[in-house]
Image (cartoon, rainbow, N blue to C red; front, side, top):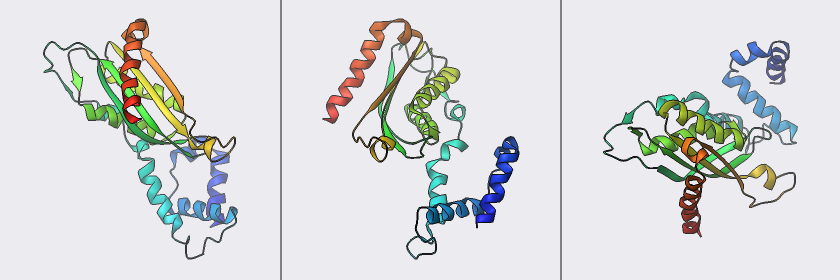
Length: 215
């Protein structure tokens, strides 16, 4: 078990690019989990945890599926039958689950995404899927916010984008300063939203309605 993990570590130290190009096998992933179980002081052969490596690898395939998905595949179909509509489209209160890239501990929260379309719009569920694609990776909240903006900008080319992400980082609640209930807010604006403060205020007011409704 340890030999499998150590052999992969040697490859990673010797040639980082090659190690990244070669995805570890499932056997190596499960061996790594067994090593961690032993390292924290438990017995990896104990009945309650002997199948944990298999379960965790299965869970990680689902939790981190964003690495196998592309935003452009989600945003490739748009709709032009919007009449004379030229105002903001807002999808708010999108729940997401992510993991901090520094400690691999969960981040949970909501994202609010608005854009000014140019002639065509995308299905509303696609915006939520874009959030999910980037959230289901190791992340910082700042990077998550910018990736959502970049994907929408590159694929829809709207007149403006506003993204607000609110997240609770369990790495602050479970370890370190151990402060639960702390919310981190990140925003990013492009186009109309960046250039017109009144549109930013309108965006915040629309989002605030969601907060009030959750109380």
